[in-house]
Image (cartoon, rainbow, N blue to C red; front, top):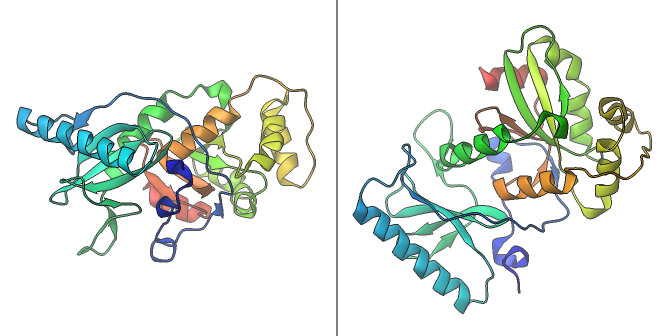
Length: 270
């Protein structure tokens, strides 16, 4: 079996508790390759040689356990979290998971810190740093950009799919968001293979914005096939944990939520 298809690693979120709204993904296949780094929270650097060695031992233990269980997963990054004896592990082409320091237990999903008025996702800052690097590496010509009116006060990256009702609802507020100084940068994220052709047609259109607007309004878009980034963008979304649309991120890589109204989005950005 492959790790991505194993039932014990099905994606799950605290949707009700965190007030998220998004169209779910109907396809979860990914490929990505990276290098292993060992780092501690906040600084991004392992603080001591002892810590680096401990992390490397943990990697070896996990790899052994994965092999024993017949799980095909490559570890690309590992970081200590604020929770004692709990590490955050990035996997090739999959959402990150948590593991205990002895490598015996793996936890998928969110680890939430309680005690404040707002819930705090323990991995938020860890994942945000990776997300920011990925967003900074995107080329403008590969995105679908709706610029702010006047000077941009905020920039958001939104994984979207024209087949998603919540994406339609979000897009209906584009003029209001742009008027509030929010620049929206869409990243293609078809929720399944059956939606890939529609998104590729939009990205291959001479006027991508016009094609997207028409598709949101219900029109069928056709365009000559071209070299496009849709598959790569879908893959990137999987790698950082996207499992539905819209998925909205700040320019700093922080996940802001699923569907948000213009007012809610501005409040989150502030």
